[in-house]
Each structure stands twice: as structure tokens, then as C-alpha cells.
Length: 233
Image 1 (cartoon, rainbow, N blue to C red):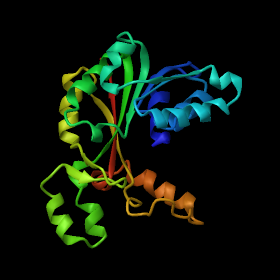
Image 2 (image 1 turned 30 degrees about the vertical axis):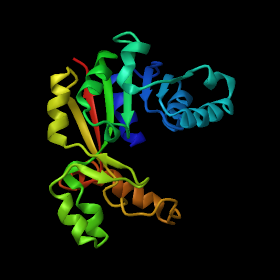
Image 3 (image 1 turned 135 degrees about the horizontal axis):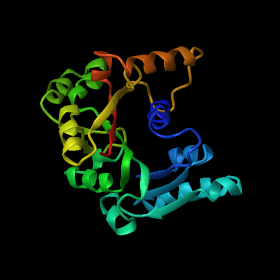
Image 4 (image 1 turned 180 degrees about the vertical axis):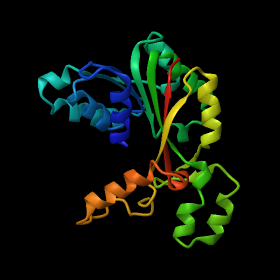
């Protein structure tokens, strides 16, 4: 997914431009730090105090130049208007957040307002059109049959959350002035891998296969996650 994001950013902005990036639901700060190391100015917004503490600890271990490019704020992604002025960012990331929001439209509209004209909105969501894949591949046929007719699921943390459909998000993005520009599948072949699984010796081939499938129909349509990129008009 990082490669897909970098590709979209490189295609929209001049090489070497220091971008203003908002990472909503920054978690442990992995993406924020990666982008800061690439030279960008990153603001991480996270409502979980424990996760934010981990992110701050990781940031403290970085060189001074990188620390100066990252700002971490405790706050809810649905309240971006409280923290920032409209048009304050060139890129807004919202990765792994929508599944925890029952009605995401207001959140997405708020994120779009944070973008400057031509800005990039990057979303990573659970694919509701492929919820039957994981239980099906695991041989849990009862759960598979239920998954065809719902957008609700239980994630690996044991939390009851929701998934999003590509068609619905495409319509939503158009309605908030950041129409869909590109989309990818994420975890096409690897969704059933156990957390903490050992990296296989042919990891490079695995990543290449995932990358190819994530860009290719019909494979990307059954990916566990969808990476959507909208552009502010």
C-alpha cells in the first residue's frame, strides 16, 4: 500500500515538494514517520491515548530533523474542523479508520474539506464485497454464507466493525468533491496469513504477486482491503 500511495503522490505533485500531510488515525505513527523521513511535513491525529503514546515514543527516537517535521495531536477524525482550517493539507490519509465509524459520510466530508485544491485523499477500508473470502478460504461455511449479505464483521482484535463497498464509496467521494481517481486491492493472497507469521524466503515474489493482483481485475475486486484515492476538485 505504501508503494501505491507514493505512486499517487508522485503523479500529482512536483518532485521534491515538501507536502503537508494529515494522517487521521495515525496509530503507532508508522506511516507518519515514513513520510516524514521522505521529507514531508506530517500531522498525526489519533484519539487513542495509548496508541498516541507509542507514536510519541517512536518519534522521540528519530533524528531531530525528522522530529521537527511531525506533529502528533490527540483528537477524533470526525472533528478535523476543530483542529485545522479548510484547505490546510495537500494529502489526507485515513487508513483503517472507517470500519470503526458507523456512518462515515460526515467524516469523509470533513476530510475532503481539509484538502487544498488538487489534494489527495487516501482511504484504506475493509472490502464489503469480499467479506465471504476469508471464512470461505478457512472452510467456515456457516460464516461464509452469512458474509454474503452483510457489511458487518468481527476483526482480528475481536471487535465488531463494518466494511465498505467500492460503489458506495465511489458515490460518496463524488458527492464531497473528491472523486475517485484510482483504487487498488490490498491483501489479495495473504489475508488468511496468521498475525506474526514468519516472512517466507520468497518474500520478494510474494510482494510482487500482491502488487500485481492489487492492480488487476478481477483479483483486486476480492481483496480483503481496498485502497481508494480521491482528488479534490
